[in-house]
Structures are given as structure tokens and as C-alpha cells.
Length: 242
Length: 282
Image (cartoon, rainbow over all chains, first blue to last red; front, top):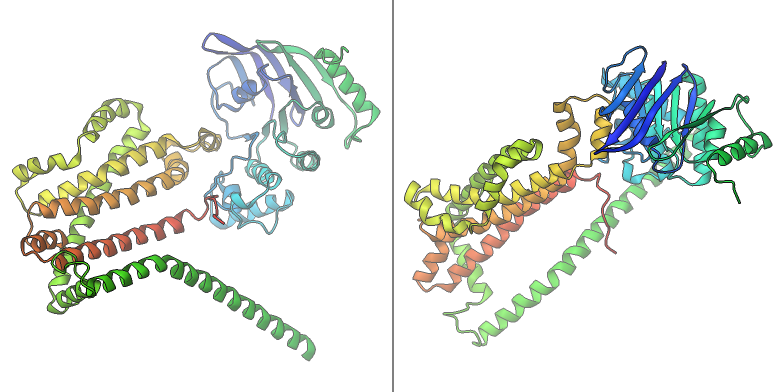
């Protein structure tokens, strides 16, 4: 539920990728990590997930500082990463334990919530990119993770599918109230989804500033409010100087 | 109500009819493939037969297909054919199983453990560069001329392609899929059985098929060096008795059985790899 990073740094072969990151995320909050490429956003997310344990500093998940993967964490990768030899249904039940019928009933429920009912028996090769990513979302959600980590989850999708899936993510968040950490390089996505946007800059990456977006959801896309946040973010990334 | 029922049954009927036409379509496609594939061999056999009858090929060097076929039928009627086929198939099968089992055990070790790779792989690679037939005299010296040396021979031939493909299959498993497994906190055993094995299956099956091919090659070598029964023995026998039809009959039988066994593996491959996203030729 609660997630806290204390002075987290990560060094690869003597080269520091991120440095002194301290963030505290409230339960149910959606936090965006935004930055240009190479500033260590994904490195940070992998450290939070426990896939990478060679970081310095502490990552506290529900008061627990043990390094490693926690049961309460779910991860949605940039690519769907479905197992090609399993059907859609079996991919979704992959991480579940227990009786087959129960697992499948649960998986069907989540497939329905991502709009994929009736496609249970397809294989990943038969899916479009958007469908595959929906399956990946269902797979991550079906274990009811309290903390959901997303690594540029929609960046490979076309603009319309992307918007659909962003709304889907918000629906899911509304129902399950997970804590979400979203790595993205898409400013519109960050302003549309997040309660708080943390901007990382530099190499090694450090926290440059935080922007709190307390607007009510659903936020109208393309509204002036979001545009002003976007301008603010662009300014702080020095990308608005022409 | 009656109308509904009628509509329902007619709907079912058209459904059935559609399924039927689908099936005939598929059968037609299969038939077409068989016909296309047999054009060349049929022409070749007819020309060969004609030329042989006209006396262009001397019959003591290249007998006509009908003579060869006659030899096979004759052996079948006498009953000796089944013994030859049976013993050769048994040798290949036994050698194939033995070589495959050893390859799976060593290959998985080398694939999974870096230490095992450092210990075993250099030696195995060195052994691989020895032409496997060079072992023949040694095996005969060690194990005599009986079944043991023959089966060992074949197992050595089968081992290398299977081993190499298992190792490269395991090493080639996508790290990204393994991360998915780790995210769900699978233990090592689950990681192996649920991700690494299925992911390396395609490569393993390729290894099995080329291993089987080599198995058939090595059974000939093994039977040439001394056997009293088997298709390879027929080759030597035909040579000693100057009966080219026996040699050719044996070669054709090798081709048929080899193809059949490969076909069985191919079916297994298609069944277990139907999930693969493969190129479809136009």
C-alpha cells in the first residue's frame, strides 16, 4: 500500500544512473515518473519492483525494507510479454495459485473488465498490439496488486488505443484503489493520469521537481488546465525555450 | 414456433454443410500437395524403367525399378524383410533414446549452470570436432561387434545435435519472459518447467529431428562394419553377391523408414508448437 524510497541510488559498473531519490507515495496515489530518456526512470522502477536488487538506499513497501519481489507488487512492462505458448486465459491465470476453476473464473472477470471477453482461447500471435497489452494489464491486475508499477505501458500503441487504455487504467484504479507508479515520457499521459508528477533530470538522474495535479478526474483531454501543466513541465525540462 | 424450429434446423444444416465443405477444401489442398510432390519422382521412375527395359542401363549395374520392387516383395514374402527392418529400426530407436537422454541431462546442466558450462562445454566441443565415425574401431575394440557397440555409435551421433540445440535453446530463452516469471515469484523449478522448457521446446525439437537423421546415417555405418541382419547388412550382402537390386532395395527402404520416422517427429512438432507465429509461404 504505502511505498517509500529513501536515498535510492543505482550504479552500473561505476556509472551512476540515478542518485539520491527519496519519494513517499500515499496509498491509492498515482505517481508519474517523467523524464527524458537515460535519466533512470526505468532503473528506479525496476528497483521498486525488486527485479533489480543492487541499489543503494532503502525501498520500504508496507513498512518492509527487504530487497526482492513482494507479493503485493504487480508490474506492467513496456511490451506485453505474454507467453506465446499459452492462450489468453492461461496467460492471465499464470500468476494465480489455487483451483483451476477459481483461477479461470477470476481471469474471465478481469478479461471482461479490459474488454476482451470471448477471446480467451486465442494465442498471443493472434492478437493485435492493443489487445496483447490489455491481456498484459489483466494479467497484472488479476493478482490484485496493492502497488502497480507501469513502465511506459502504452508507449508502443497508437494514439487512440493509448487513450482507451489510459481510461481503462483509471477505471481499474477507481475500482481497486491500487497505488500506482507510472514511468512515462509522454507528458499528456502524465498530466491526464497522475496525482503527482515527479520530474527526473540529468545524468545521473535526480529529482528536479514535483508537480501536484489535484484536478478532478476525468480530466478533459486538451483542456487549458492540462495544457498549462504541460507547459510547466516542458519549462522545467528546458524544452520550451525557442 | 414451428417456423423457429425450422429456421433453427436449417441453420444447423447450413452450419454442418459449411463444415463439410471446409473439410473437403482442406482435403483437396492436401491432395494437391501430394500430387505436386509426386510429379517428379513418378516421371523419374517411369523414365528409369523405360531406359532399363531398352537396355540403356546394364541390369547388373542398375536394375529396373520393377526388379527392385520385386526384390522387396520377394523378401517380404519370405519373411526376411521384417527381420532386417525390425533390427535396424530397433538399433536406431535405442541409440536415439540413449543419445537423447544423455543430451537432455548434460544439456540442461550446461544450459542452467554457468559452472557446468565452464566444466563440460569445452570438452564436449572438443569431442564434437572428432568425426564421430572415427570412434568405430575403438568401440568395436571395447564392446565387440554386437549390439552394444552399434547402439553406442548411434547414440554418439544423436547426442551432439540434440545437446547443442538444447543448450542454445535454454540460453536463448528471452530474459523478458523470465522476468515475468520472477514478478510472480516462481521458484527455480517453476521457472524451468513453466517458462524455460516451453520456450526452448522449438529448438529442442529441431535438435531431435536432426539427431534422428544422424541416427539413420550412423546405423548404416554401424551395420556396414559387421552385422548379420539389418538394412545395412543388405548393402554389404548385395555388394558381395553383386546384386545391385538388393542394394537399391535397401536404400529405398532406408529412405521410406527414415522419412516415416521424421514424419512422426514432425507431427509431434506441429502439435506441440502450434502456438508459434510462423511464416506462411504463398
